[in-house]
Length: 206
Image (cartoon, rainbow, N blue to C red; front, side, top):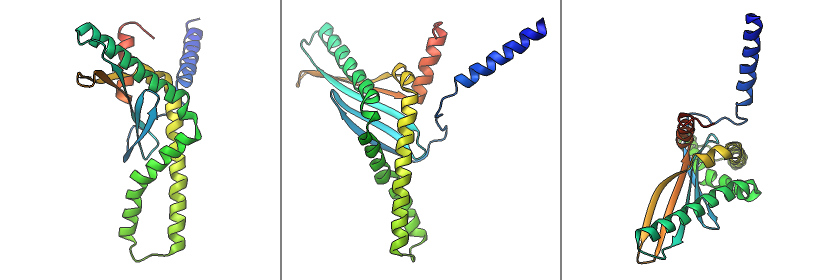
């Protein structure tokens, strides 16, 4: 009886481990990085990714009018700006990220900020070879790789969307009394996701 219980437990643990494995696990060793900005309804959103298709951080900013300079009024404005910044992030993952345009935007950022480094290195090591056909083939391969990287970044964000929303942290809050508004910046990284998960477990959450 005890032997049967151990076998059943082992099978259950094996199934649990398989079900929790992400479809697109994030590579733990980041390479060269690039930033790409998206203009959302409530403010800018910046995505940082690397040349392996890992998303490294997502930052969202928003503002809210400052109705009163009293502490209570400032805090209400901060809460409003925070909700707007979080809405930016949520709408980005729900709508913009799924569009073809987002893939093109990420791909262009890769070509401009990362592939450019590769091409300069290649030209230094093969400066004597200026064959036009070879250059054209290299450019084609760079575009194909850029598109693959962009697709991978999108899939990894989509696979982690729920964890991303739970791992959000407020990284900056500012008051502009001259312009009568407040601004809030939120950010999420792999580290903040792990921190939020550990905090939930410590409080008995799931």
